[in-house]
Image (cartoon, rainbow, N blue to C red; front, side, top):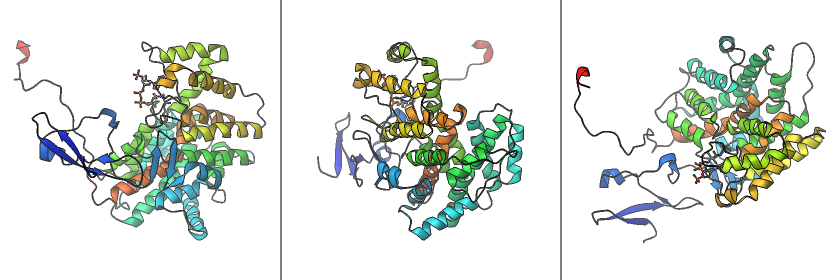
Length: 430
Ligand code: ACO
């Protein structure tokens, strides 16, 4: 095999030569784009297990080594030294900002936090117990109704403004959804506060008394948002790219991504982990639940375990587990039954042959919910928190996709297994 081609022998003995493409790092990629045109065959890969859908220079993951890098920077370094706003600039613009670039960017995000007052009326239409993810998706989708005439995807300024609005307004929408659930009045953003302080203020302040920002909580959220900021072509990001590839309004594409994130196999897992830990209840029950997860006749899975890409460990989970210890100590939470239970469950599963053979390790969602719970954030808001962190990843990928001159509408093919042609039978003869 030559270095830049992959050869296949077709069933009729013809030799096919497929170009091989090489990225900066990572495995080589066989380019099958011309396969159908030249050979009349499709490739088949449900769930895109072996398929690259695009070229991207935003995020790199090595699932075998547990590596995650944003624009080349290891997530561990960013988690230790950066802030979510700086990471957002990095993801959107490709490089770390200078001091003046960061100040300007942060100022812009702070000034875009308010919602059009009309948008707040949407919340009056939802039932008091509407799930905040459903509200987030619906209200973000409605941004396409507000910002359609000023959204020309071919205009780089418009693309920037879109990204700023998504980043700045999502916390306001998320907090409004929470306020609806709690029956409390909506709290307007305060632009003198930083991103996470402002979010906590909108979430927990009430007009009747002053609200003191909990700095431990603000720092913890900032770190969690950094860890969730991007994850290359995951389900929700691919959804954003796919919806956006038709030229659809990008706010609608983000709403589609939020909907995809909600599923329990994706971002919804953080909510599912907490529910699972509560159901397990006690270390004495762990074996029973681990056995259930291994039983093929039982649909139960250990939530927060396993990942499509990470087959060794999820670097985000390692950081979050360490953070759990620190946050619970700093919040002076001595009684930490759920965290103790989660650690014990992790240990039991990591020693179990089933989990070892299938390379199932805790993922980012396994411990994040325990921190959210300690910060007073209700379970139904956990996936919303994930969405806030991931919003900048979605916006970065949409921008990359829409400005790619080689970009095409995403349109996979299929292996058809339905009936071949048959003739219509009149109803009385069926
Ligand atoms: N508990 C028990 N068994 C599991 C688990 C689990 N959590 N995860 C995977 N397996 C088993 C599967 O049953 C399968 O077994 P088989 O080969 O005998 O059929 C094998 O491991 C491979 O699993 P797949 O579902 O084929 O792997 P895939 O890459 O498609 O799915 C996924 C990855 C969806 C994350 C899966 O591991 C899962 O459902 N985990 C629980 C939900 C979860 O935590 N999701 C969050 C993911 S991270 C994120 O989105 C932020």
